[in-house]
Image 1 (cartoon, rainbow, N blue to C red):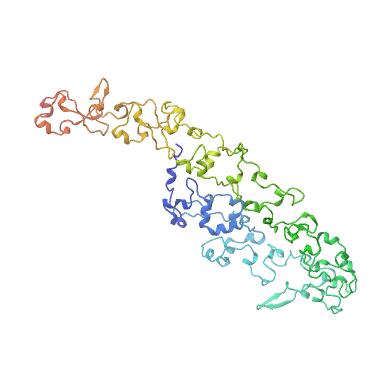
Image 2: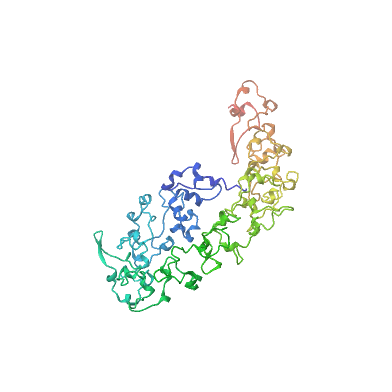
Amino acid sequence: MLFSGSLSAQLSPGDLANSHKDLEGMSKCTQCHDLGSKVSNDKCLVCHKEIKSLMDRNAGYHASSEVRSKDCAKCHSDHHGRNFNMVRFDEKKFNHTQAGFELKGAHKQIDCRKCHLPDLIEDVNLKKRKNTFLGLGNKCVNCHKDVHQKTLGNDCAKCHTDEKFVPASKFNHDRSDFPLTGKHKTVQCLECHKKETRGGKEFQRFSDVPFKNCNSCHKDPHDNNLGNDCKNCHNDQSFTGWAGMNKFNHNTTKFPLKGKHKQVDCRKCHTMSATPQNVFQDRIGVQTDDCIACHKDVHDNKFGNKCVDCHKEDSFRKVGNLNGFDHDRTSYALEGKHEAVDCKKCHKSEHMTDPLPHNTCASCHKDYHEGQFAGIVVTPDCASCHTVQGFAESTYSLEQHAKTKFPLDGSHIATPCFACHKQDDKWKFKGLGVRCVDCHKDVHGGQIAEKWYPNKACEQCHVTSTWKDNRFDHSKTAFALKGAHTQQDCRACHVPDAEFKYGKFAGLPATCSQCHKEVHNKQFDVKGVTDCARCHTNDDWKVKKFNHNKTNFKLEGKHANVECAGCHKEITQAGQSFVQYKFEQVACVTCHQ
């Protein structure tokens, strides 16, 4: 039957491992398992918070695409005994890249335990775990001594490789804040990066070396009368060389020029009539994101005054990074899954401010159900069953289902939606039928007569709580159930066999001897049939109806008090043992010797 396998699933397949032994017992199954289903990953992560934390941050081995999609039980199965090791893998074949740290260079030769040490684990709770591989950081300084004493950040790989720490072969001064040009290329490193003693150790200074202005290292012969940015006029080939104003780097100011600003003539922003002492100083204090200080706000402050949230310097017509844009200022506040949708998925026209229909979900989303819920007058919106948190889950309730042509009761209440509404790759909500046989297989195969099974109406016998319970009225058949028969399970008489897997219901005999074993060796046969009812009742096999005085040997005198077994002994004839009730003669010598 439909739930014939459910009973076996209620029995534990074996003891839990030591780490899970506190979860032993039938009452605790649902701490790991969903009812009627397998182990739930979500329930595993309720206890294994350290794993969940890593997965939430998309970090570590369990967050990799190859592992995240697997069920926890695929690698960490249980019910194999107390001493079963649930964490097992081949360290030599382990793909370290999936853990978020690819082993390269010298790291490939290092034994796992050289890095996975308790002293290198920051988390106090993880540090206590024996032989754990969790808790290590993926930065060099998590394992290696920082010879730069926290002055160059934690990304050692920007300068060093996995092959050798010295020299810093990846460092390129041209990518630093101070690219070496001109005469600077021939200067020895120690001339600028001096060695000193810091914290009692030799230390070479690579950060916080002043270089913003030439006068950080060089003396200003102009005594700061022309500002401290010598490059406005000079170049690094020679102090005696002249660069001219066209070499001025506006990016050294607090207003670096980007996009269209690069093409604007200086005179458009600066007043050129100023004296040599204050020329180009008339825009001091204007911030790069203070667009309205120069430009007109065409939106009349509807979206605030931070133009850079939407626009960029290349063109007002082009939309830049919209991560900072507050959509709640519009007539459609973003909630749920909408918050993560790329703007261009909805705003497909050239102008982001072009109006979009948004009164119903169908204004943007395709009808996944292909018109199954279309109404004659009003078609319900997706929001009737779904939320903006995702289409996968439905808010459609049992109360709402009760108003349909098929109210849910019994086991149907606990049946997941997809069991009925997703028989193939697509969801189906119309034309499913409301009869049992529209969903369930007719296991009786036409052996039950139409009068007991009109139009294959299973409810004539079965109830929705379970297939085993039934309400069939046997008294309406030719064999009304009486006495002990009323206490029997249906299958005791309607026995399943190879031909009838769920029991035979048609053509069953109605006489006792055709169901029950004949134990009297045919002593009471009349024309080849033993009528058990002559002596027995339906209540039990005790002899309640037999009257010895109607036989050829009436019980008189002392015989009336003799137990039946005193005269009727068990004998064996032709290999058959039975109690002898009929004798060839009833003379005294038959019993008394």
